[in-house]
Length: 293
Image 1 (tube, rainbow, N blue to C red):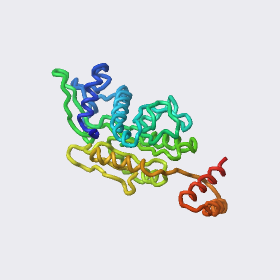
Image 2: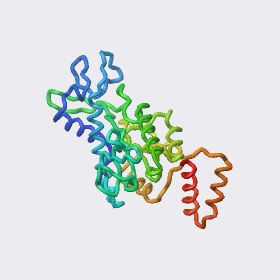
Image 3: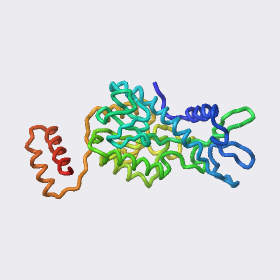
Image 4: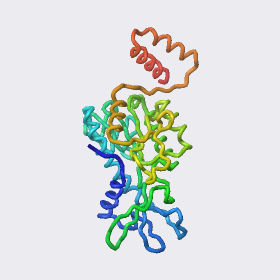
């Protein structure tokens, strides 16, 4: 069984990256020549901004997340695919889906074969020191002890996630049945609690999910979920698996429109003549989409 994000994954990232990247691409160098993943809270020396690590941790976490979802994908007869392109719903070569559960193994997909889209917004959470003398990596604190703002705690990360998801949703009706999940390895800030719940309740994004059960070493404040589960933290793999399967089990449909009340009433009246709830919904959605053409 797969495991969720832990310190071991971050250590593995640094060890593997050191096979082809320099220390300066992965760590900050302090005034006393220490190699650190982040500037400590109390560091008062000259500080620089490290950008070179972003693409490295991005590639690592996307591949890791693809593997994480592979077992779940098998349970629904699908595949976990990295870098999916589907131009019909705005997933281009320049902006593919980080991970998608699909009916086939292909990178280029038709919307009807995409079961779920997963955007990966993960980063190095803990602070690490690389000790050059014996080539050892030592964890020296959680994200409360350093000056970095990792993962979903960054406002720009949240806004990019929201923007991309909205673009997929409004690009064409072909994306209306596809759940979109944002995967992170940190909590979110309180300023986004209401926003993520609004996005979930309105069907734009089905959740901001943290797959890091214990991001704080001292068991400090670590939100489990927001009021309407727009943000949710998973504590074990089985919990994640069941939530994904539940999301895929029942067919849902996203819809949005701006109509007059009279027009909406006419559509509801016509749709209500159908004999089953499913047929009523299908008719209403068809009328709604016809009104936009």
